[in-house]
Length: 164
Length: 195
Image (cartoon, each protein chain N blue to C red):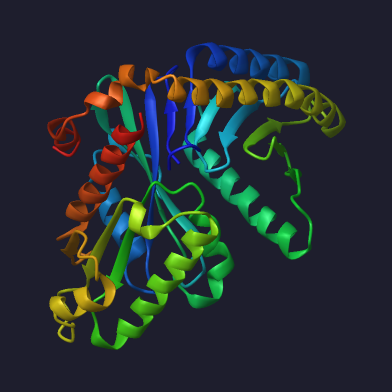
């Protein structure tokens, strides 16, 4: 698991949140969220209260993984955009920088064209932020800042307590 | 691949239940779901066929509690066990932090167990993982059935490294939480090594 773990810091999280909020407003979407390719929810914006975002994140990642499998069978590297059209709501899923999935759920207040356009713009900004995060995480590891990490002191007792 | 979020103070880890068809992977998750407090679990999602065979995966998010102020979440997944779902099975292993191999204890399923274990090793290797280096637990399920193989034999065939193994009856529960607890502990210890 070593090098590829995703570590999110306060500063970068703020930047991501800002981008998502902007996208949410610009596209008049219902919900916008960001998922790690492995199905972990990273951040969200909009009307998330009546949506089970954890399940949605895991299923979206499954969807992207299955589509990626199809792509490879066809000799494509990846299909970077998925779009599902419903009676009321639509969902636009796009892969950013091979690693992060951006999901926009929208209804008739918005349009596919608008979502595509805005997603394209925000993708560049998000790619930059995630590159920064990767660089920062590597840097902290090599500088030995890991010692300050809260996990260094996890005791067996802490772990046992989780299962009481 | 765990996800550590310093902003929301959360750690998310992925545990995959692997094993041959009908060995009880989904049953493990269903039991965990039934016995967990509502505030600790999310929905149990099953992408299954009409005959309740897993088609893509089952998913159960569990929030166990806090460690050093960080909320610890485990995402439990199962793979489809049937041989012809090989392509989907591979996908689920992406980003895995810990593996539970659920073996069917019935004598006539030994070959299927071994085949599935080989398949697991191959699929992990394709993603750049080595089973010997991952947090890993073996569960000998269906111990309540009359025609089960002796544990020594199963250990010899399926667990030559003698890693932690648990006898279980996933339908009624014995061994289910012991297995989960063991793999979760290994995942957290591994996390401790890296951070």
